Length: 290
Image 1: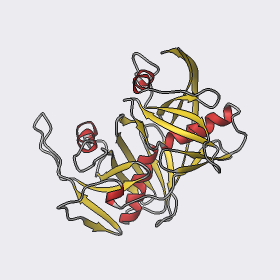
Image 2: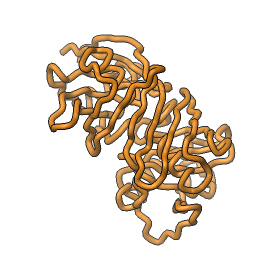
Image 3: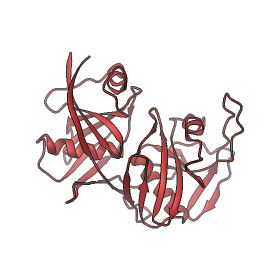
């Protein structure tokens, strides 16, 4: 069958977007892998599916598949592209829409400058809701944050793991945030997959490497669960900033420099929602035979 798609990107995090509002799209893991493959398919970090709403008070249903084929809970950069897509394609004229993901409702809003703000909901720090196994661990407290010691296994090449303490939080998907002194020397390709698949994370985890530059500016790299390191991760940026705010390292509004661009994250603390603002851009339309 032939499948029409749109390629989009938000701060370098790239997506294949499929319109299932007029005709259902049953996306198998094999098709998701084919679409995401950068050599034999279109190439993308995630595949986004736009579906009609199936409950009151929601405008659309928003589904996300990693390029490894599995369906996941959340993608913040994808949410911004989602709003740009449904507006550009005439599926809505509203500048503010509500979308249903696997486990929460997101509110998306287009700013006057064309950037998109996503209400990501409140962060969840309770380890059992991430989920994260704390058995036998004693955290270090900084501010209101629990920094958990994470014993990293020795990789196949025998490199000795560095000491690792992570802030653990869910933004609708699981994140572990490791503060580093210098992002340029942090060995993300080596330790990212080790943290992602650490046995204390029952559903695996997105591994963030955070370098604060000031109280309102940070650098960030994220090794995403099931996708590897990406140029930007929206939920990862939110997780990193809320960890930094809870620890007392950061103020309530922070500019996050990713390898793909700038994201702005705001959080007032407690049960307040996290707001993420950034770009969302069309790249090209296409058609692929599956």
